Image 1 (tube, rainbow, N blue to C red):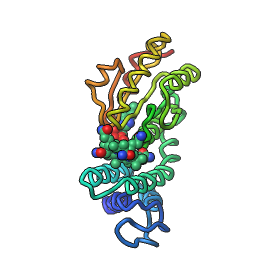
Image 2 (cartoon, rainbow, N blue to C red):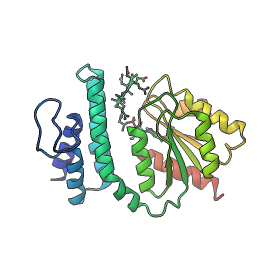
Image 3 (spheres, protein in one colour):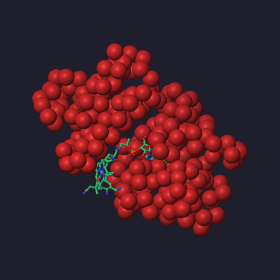
Amino acid sequence: MGDKIIERIVENVLQGRRNKDDEGIEEDYIGEPGVAELVQEALDNGIDTNTILLEGLSKGMEQVGEKYETGEYFIPDMLTAAEAVEAGMTVMEPHLASEGGSGGKGKVIMATVEKDLHDIGKNLVSIMLKGAGFNVVDMGIDVPAARIVEAAEEENADLIGLSALLNTTMTNMEDVVKELDKKGLHDKVKVIIGGAPTSDDFAAEIGADGYGKDAFAAIRIAENLIQAGGTK
Ligand code: B12
C-alpha cells in the first residue's frame, strides 16, 4: 500500500502534476490525485515523512534530472516538476516542523548562492533541519555572500547552509567563507555546503566546515558541528 503511494508520488512528479486539476505531461490525468493529494494520502496512511521526502519527492526529481540529461525532458518540464514537488512540500512542512519541537538545537541560515536559482534541494534540507529541531532562516535563491553573512550576524546564527547546483555558481560559496573570515566570525558560525557539483574535497578546498550529500547528511553534520562548538 505504502510503496504504491510512493510510486504514484514519483510518477506524478514526473508528470509535473501539483493536484487533481493538472494535466500530465504525457497524457490526460485530470481528476486523478496529484502530488499534493498523494502526499496527504501518504501522511494519512502513517508513512513517515523521510520516506515521502526521499523516496517520493526527491527520487521523482532525480528521475526528472535524468530525463533532462537524456534529452527526453526540456526546461519547462523541469519547471512543472519542480512546482509539483513544491506543492508536496507545502503539505509536508507543518508535519516536519511539529516533529522537531522548538528549534532549540541551533540556528541555521540557509541560502542558494548568488546567480543560482535551484531551490528544491535547499528547501528539502531546510524542512528536514526544521523537522530535526533546528531553527531555520531560509533566505531563498540567488543570495549574495555579503547578505548571507549579514543575516548570520544579525540572527546570531550557529551555522550557514549553502546550496549550489551549477559548476558556475559553486565557486560563490567560497565568497561566503571569505566574508566570514574577513569579519572574524568563522569561529562562531560554521559553514556547511551541498548540491550536486559539490563534494568533501570542494568543501575542504574553500574552507567550508562540512559537506552533505543529502538532507540526512545535513542533519548529521549540523548536529556534529554544533556539538563540537559547544554552547554559545
Ligand atoms: C529542476 C532543475 C532546474 C529548475 C530549477 C527549479 C527549482 N525551483 O529549483 C530550472 C528549470 C529553473 C533549472 C534551470 C537551470 N538549470 Co537546472 N536542473 C534541475 C534538475 C533537473 C534537478 C535539480 C533538483 O531539484 N534536484 C532534486 C534535489 C532534491 O536534489 P539536489 O538539489 O541535488 O539536493 C539534494 C542534495 O544535493 C543535498 N543538498 C542540496 N543543497 C544542499 C545544501 C546543504 C547545506 C546540504 C548539506 C545539502 C544540500 O540535499 C538535497 C536533498 O537530498 C538538475 C538535474 C540534476 N541531476 O540535479 C538540473 C541541473 C542542475 N540544471 C542544469 C542547468 C545547466 C540549468 C540551466 C543553466 C539551464 C539553462 N540552460 O537555462 C538553468 C540555470 C538557472 C540558474 N541560474 O540557476 C545542470 C547543471 C550543470 C552543471 N553542473 O553546471 C543540471 C545538472 C542538468 C544537466 N545535467 O544539465 N534547472
